[in-house]
Length: 246
Image 1 (spheres, rainbow, N blue to C red):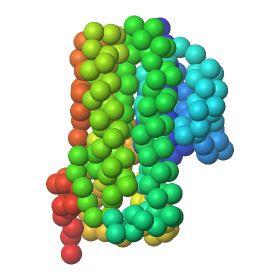
Image 2 (cartoon, helix red, strand yellow):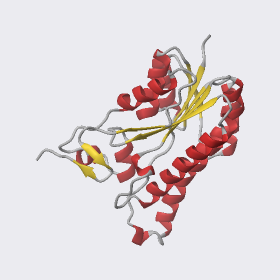
Image 3 (cartoon, rainbow, N blue to C red):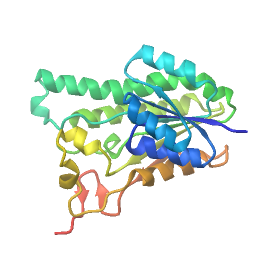
């Protein structure tokens, strides 16, 4: 029997890689993201289905869920950091707007889509929610106030979900990646050369590295729940401690 896996934020990076890995594992993959053209290209590459999705928009989520149908796995990957503003600038309107965007995407979007798909996940008899969080969910770093706060909240939601689903046929896994070379840094910093700066002198994870961890988690026997997986490059010991070759 073929099972369906839903992956959000699947137009690039970890989401796209996860779609490919789960498709290779035999899942029917449903990909959601706002950038539809890129999303369709990823779906074509892995035989999946692309459906436009903005997790911050309740009507978009409702339309998406109606099109998904039966579902066994949900990978909440949509999110992101927008800016790296110091706390001293939180009173600025543009900073507050970025913080709100991070909260809407990383927290409310995750909660909204999960709640909407829970009936289908439970109905599958072996549902699994995977929340891609971050080291920022339990470690702070300068300039990360908005993102750190949002990921702490996402991690809190994951813990609550695990408790609320105890005794029901739905597993919950939190994946906390460290430094992964995707478009994340470029979006956060707002500059095209961000990766050259952020990953200078060290070897970061790839999107495939994280996708392989997710694949492993969702293919364990149904009685096995990997509650939390922290995955970092060898060159990284914490959100703020990174070894770099000079």
